[in-house]
Length: 213
Image 1 (cartoon, rainbow, N blue to C red):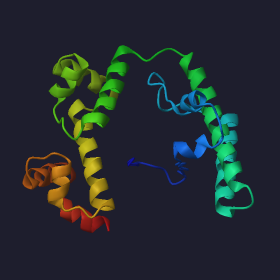
Image 2 (image 1 turned 90 degrees about the vertical axis):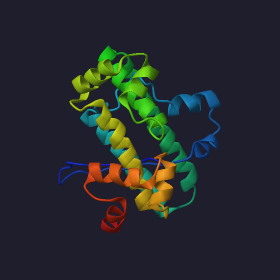
Image 3 (image 1 turned 30 degrees about the vertical axis):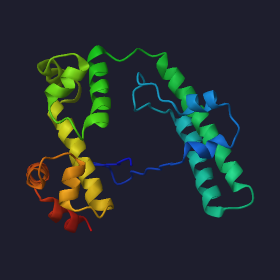
């Protein structure tokens, strides 16, 4: 259910994405509290920790090993893969623990981070800056000014962009009709959804679905 979106990437850009179920690691018999700790991300940690060259090489090597094990499916590859993932998680946890010792984010950054979390939770139901400001216990003006200072974009941009991202995902990866998608995203009518989508993307949902296929 996660959406990945990329823009302005360079010609030498490359990404490796690792997806797994928590239950896959549970077989390794780690104490449940320890496993939860490895998978937990502290909200005070910035989401873009910078790796030095040595850290990058080490993590890249682990990803390459994982790829080879999953691709080759030799004897014990499941056990090796599971342990490589755990090793990766411990290395990232160590990196994150180091970041925790660095200065905490500012109050403005904290408000933006909390705003981002609330959008992810409520974007299907809440579409106004005021609704999120109320949840945060601040005024809509304060939220708008804070988000603009941190990101150079207005708060409403992030609310609408999340709805558009979800709309694109549903149009590409499901067979739902435009009316069904509108209902799923809690638009009062399909026409309202079509206008919203076209205003922000320049094309109707149906046109987008045809162009992307």
